[in-house]
Image (tube, rainbow, N blue to C red; front, side):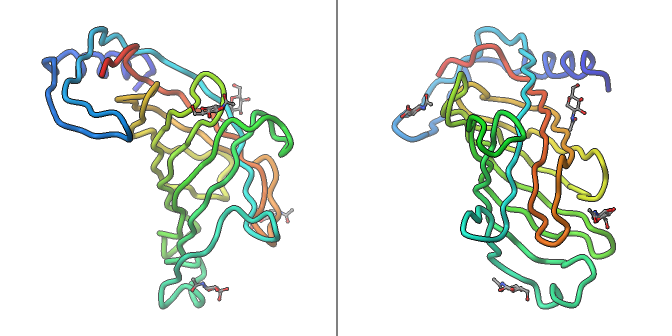
Length: 195
Ligand SMILES: *[C@@H]1O[C@H](CO)[C@@H](O)[C@H](O)[C@H]1NC(C)=O
Ligand SMILES: *[C@@H]1O[C@H](CO)[C@@H](O)[C@H](O)[C@H]1NC(C)=O
Ligand SMILES: *[C@@H]1O[C@H](CO)[C@@H](O)[C@H](O)[C@H]1NC(C)=O
Ligand SMILES: *[C@@H]1O[C@H](CO)[C@@H](O)[C@H](O)[C@H]1NC(C)=O
């Protein structure tokens, strides 16, 4: 599906939702009882950031939380699960501006080849999207040059988001799997969602 077809399908989907959608929903201090979508025309927001993967040492930001009974014998490390809070920076340089954090789980979910399951939130901590999140899910065959995952939702600036994530390793240490991953994200979301 081309980007335009995708945007159109999204537009039609949103348009078919009658508003206001009244549902009780509590998010932090904000209590939401009316959700109106006054302008359903989707916005397309391109983003690029760099994930700093540090699995070892005193700056570790990703920790093993579980192994399966077969993880240690499995050629793919099947069943390992890590919880991460990896830094997301503006450029590949780990000392460049911090734009947010990738918080969530990754683990081996493929018995036969290296295929990592991802389920994490991008939590923006600076700039225009400070405080917003993007919810990302997908399969990552880490040894492929380019991989693709999905934006399945978001909050604040990215309410009702959907979108596409592509990623590639810029550098990787095969011993520790530490390195820098480039993310290009195309977020499609309504221009305004009033709560
Ligand atoms: C998982 O297995 C690895 C490798 O044997 C070990 O270093 C790690 O401590 C284990 N972690 C958990 C949470 O079981
Ligand atoms: C991001 O928002 C938080 C909460 O409102 C605020 O404390 C913080 O200073 C903001 N950070 C930046 C870099 O703007
Ligand atoms: C991100 O976009 C840039 C510019 O189009 C491109 O050079 C790079 O390969 C892309 N990276 C990924 C991971 O899609
Ligand atoms: C790291 O491992 C991958 C996959 O086995 C291999 O293609 C690559 O050449 C290795 N890189 C280095 C620097 O050894």
